[in-house]
Amino acid sequence: MYLYAARRSFLKYLGSLPCFLEFTLPAFGNESSSIYDIIKKHGLSDKTTAILFDFDSKEVVSSHNHDLRLPLASVTKAVTAVYGLETIGSSYKFNTDLFMNGTLENGLLTGNLFLLGGGDPSLSTERLNYFAKKLKKIGLKEIKGNFFYSPGIIPEFITIDPKQLPEQSYNPGFSGLNLNENKVFFKWRRSGTSYDLSLTSDGRKPNFKPANIKISLADNGRAIYQYNANLSSKEENWFILRKALRNNGSRSLPVRFSAAFTANALKSLCSQKSISIPDPILSEEHHNRGDLVASLESDALLEIIKEMLDNSTNVTAEVIGLFAGRKWGLDFKSITESGNLMSSWFDYVSGTSGALMTNHSGLSGDSRVSAYEFVKFLNREPTRDVLPQILKKRRLFGNQNEKLNQSEVSIVAKTGTMHFTRGLAGYIIVRGRIRASFAIFSADIEKRQLIGAHQLASPPGSKAWLRRSKAQENQVLSSWANTYL
Image 1 (spheres, rainbow, N blue to C red):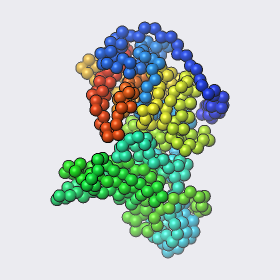
Image 2 (image 1 turned 60 degrees about the vertical axis):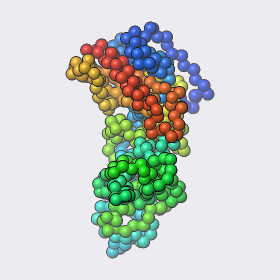
Image 3 (image 1 turned 60 degrees about the horizontal axis):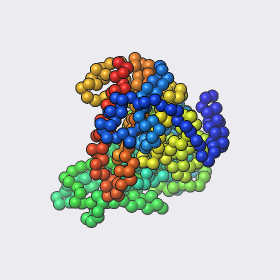
C-alpha cells in the first residue's frame, strides 16, 4: 500500500510544483576543528562538503560546507536504488519474451519470430541461450518469414553520456533489450608485423561473434580508437590505431545498439544449434506476434540493484531509472528528463529543493547535491529500511584504523569517482545498529571544465587529485568512526 500511496502523493506534488522553490538550510554551529584541520591540510577546503549525523542525539555533530552543492558521481546510484525499489517494487522481475506466428511443419516455420524486450538489464548470453534451446526442442530448423525484434518498454539510447570517449566500456547504449551489460570483448594478438583482431561476447559462454560490430586496424589518426555507426542498419565499426598496440592484449568495448546486438546474438546462438533464422529486423509496429514460445524472467529487482551497487554498473542504473519513469506513466526521450524526475522525487521524499541529477548512474559532472541534502535522504525511514542492507561494507586504511576494522563498528557506503570528483555516503553501524549517517563530496569543477577532448582519458593532475581526495575522505571518516568505538 505504501508504494502506491507514495506514487499518488508524488504525482500530486509534481503537479503543484512552483517554477522556483526556496529552501532555507538551518543554522549550524561551528564545525569540528579536527574535521576542518584534516580538510585544510589536503587543500580542498572550498571544494568539499561533509556531514556526520548522529541518530541517538538526532543532531549534526560534524560538518564542513554543509550547503555546498557538488557532483555526486556514482553515489547517485544509491538514490537510484531506493528510487527503483520504491517505485517499481523490490520483488519485480523483468521479462524478455520470444513469440512465433504461422505454422511449423517438418522443421520449417512459415511465419515470423519476435524477440521482445522487457527492460531486463541483467540478461546474459547463458540465459539468452535458453531461447535457442527452446527453439531446438520444438523442432525449428529454418524460418520462411522474418525475425523481428523490439526494445519494447525502453527505447534505444546509444550512449549514457556523449561527452565520454567512445571506447569507454562503462558508457554503452541501452534499451529494453540488453545483453552482457552491453559490452563486447576485444582481443588483439601479434601476427608477424601485423595483428589479428577479434570481437567476441565479452568472454561470456556460450561465446559468439557479434554480427553487427566490426573492428579494423587504422594506420592514421590522432585518436587511438575511432568509431562510427550506421543508424539505419545498426552496424558499428571500430578502428584501432596500429601503432598504439603492443604485443597481445584485450579490453572491453561498449555496445551502442543494444537491441540489435541482443537480436544478432540470438541468431548466432541459434546457428550454433543448426537453426537458420534471417537477419533481425527492428519492429516499430505492433505486429500480430502469435504465440509465446518462451519467456526469460530476471532475478528480483532487489538482487539486481544489490549487484548494481556492488559493481557500480552504469547501464543497470540507467535502465532502472528509465523503467521507474514508466511506472509513473511517463515516457522519456532523454536521460536528462528522466534524471530530472528522479531529482524531483529526491527533493520530495527528503524535504529539500534544488537537487539536480541529470541521469541515474552519476556518469556526468552536471549533478549537484550538498552533503546536508544527501544526509536528509539517508535519514528518512524508508531509505534506512533498505539501503544499509544492500550497500557494500567499506574498510578504512592506515595502521591507526586496524583497531576500528577489527571492532564491532562497521561502515557501509557507496563511492563515486570521476575526474576531479570523489564522493562517499552511507552509514556507521555499531553492533548491528545504525548509529550515524554521513556524506563526503569533493570536486574541483573548474578543473573538470578545463579538460580538453584530447585529455579525456587521463587529464593532467587528475590521478594526484584523486589520491589527495581519497586520503582526505579516509581521514575524515576515520575521525568520525573512531568516536563510536
